[in-house]
Image (cartoon, rainbow, N blue to C red; front, side):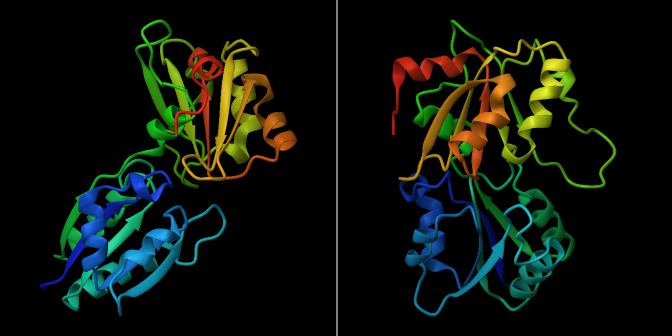
Length: 247
């Protein structure tokens, strides 16, 4: 098996935030399998004749099921192709990159990872919200708001994420905002805890709304905020009023 598969992080959305190494590999690849969260402008960097495969991966809109993606990666590696698996943000942070790497290693394929700029940190900071700050918190917790269905063990218990967890940065949670708010408040969080919702961060369509934890779902509906979105819960959200946009 002479092919190589590179799991490449595309960054948060702005093509300029993709790494140099990732861009170089994108230009060399025989096959590029990309997710919906990877900016389509990046595909213009692909060499002529490269095979482009849309793997989807938005909620309820997967062009390929995960097992199909895994099988295709193995297939192309066995054919000796140079493959870039282009994933939004960073491949391993809530990105299924580790699952894909496992399947490739099981099949005996050569696989490498190219870290990407994670939206979990970059999107809030571009919106003027540092996830840590000496006057607010020295701790940050990253959480997925969209867990794998059917997994019983080690699920997020939102009621336990109150106190001692610093800033909460919630990815892929816009559709579950009402339940998240309720559980955080049931766990003892003040309904008036500052929060921010960032839609389509780092892109020209970025929108930011400041709110409080009890009104996450209400704000999303009233402001018509769309995925991809990140929710930041904690007093650092108020710093946007001082810093504004930093993009």
